[in-house]
Image (cartoon, rainbow, N blue to C red; front, side, top):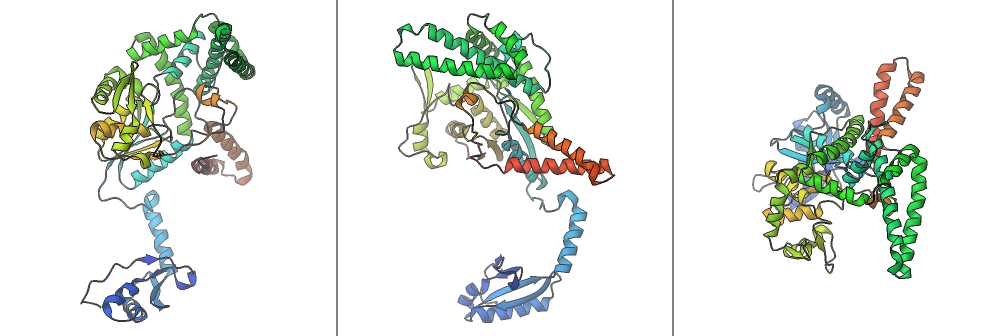
Length: 479
């Protein structure tokens, strides 16, 4: 129609009122600058030309207003095509296959194997699995990974408590069993530590003694709650742990033994971690979430990868030693690489990070290795306070391109004790319990809905799983 100049792309928009049609275009306002005609004249000419072509999915095309083109859909034809496409494509309906399939490594959940996945941690598996399904449907080769953080004090505390019980077979769901051991053992050990500290507090000032006594009173109150929840477990662990002169040293021995690859420590800690992961798998499978690879932090330590990563970091300008401790100068990195806004840091905020406390070399290596093996796409669904610096530490070592992290965090209304001392509120409904409750509800209701119980039960359970996944995925960040 207009051979003397190039026509700009026609962008279609949804009009503010359905009376104007299902789609509208405002391209005539741009065309008028070149065609030396009014936008309305151009709209009339284009609408007439499109009408002459006779497109089966369009009922009508008309000019409107000062120069808009409105499109009305042939509802009968469009509905028929939609239904036929949905029947033919089945589960692939709605997904456009990519012309360039990519290898995508997606890590999600990665809850520490110390207690059941509670409602505050359940959002990441829902988001991660949804992303993996979407990417797979679009034709990408997706590998779902779970990073098992099995090294450190938490796992060692559980192993210590489990050994004091005589390494029994779990009672009930294994992750709940492990969570009980963790909570009770942590509680008893902290009380023992505080009692010794109070007894030696004669040389401290009154304020410091008062704080110790207050902490001891708080933990004694918590222990009463533990005894009500786990009477048999508490009695057995208390009787055994109080026999040790220094339980904390016993835990430290396990930590050192596990990190050095000592056989007895490896067998014990791996056993308790695997028990907890067994419960995690049951929970994830109950909401139809699958993991392709379980990647253990301890493996990275035993094969020397972590030490090699530390050496690489020490060769950068951002790592130094102070008082025998390696430190990572995050402030220098943020300034040099202009990362303040990306990390959400105040321009005037100094952010020195101690490796032994905040930055995990195992995770740094893990990220780095995944990038090397899975170029060009890597997606991580992680907690807000986890791994943000690790990503930029990798950039420091390897000068990698920026990754594609998705950080989400549920801010749980729990006391500081829940996070730092293992006081886990067991009676709260876990994901698995909610699914169990909803499934039971479906079984009860099914007898009144229809006689085809088997078919209806399957539909009901699938519906509840979908509702549960969506509800958890929609949690507000500050719930």
